[in-house]
Image (cartoon, rainbow, N blue to C red; front, side, top):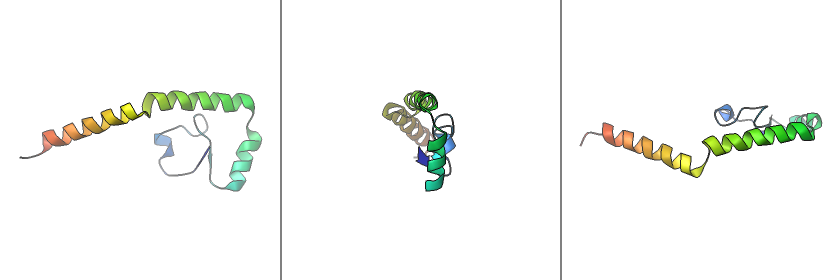
Length: 76
């Protein structure tokens, strides 16, 4: 579970890969509606997404690609 912030959906799909609450009342509501099966499904989905798109190796590759693109476009 995380608090709401603009852009969260670019990293995880709210409701299916992560639970989002804006305040304490929403946290309680989410927890009240959660059961073990749903928690496991969401946890597995988040785990798969994190391994597929949010690893240090993946971020390093993105940085390298961005830097290579900026070097190619630079005027020397």
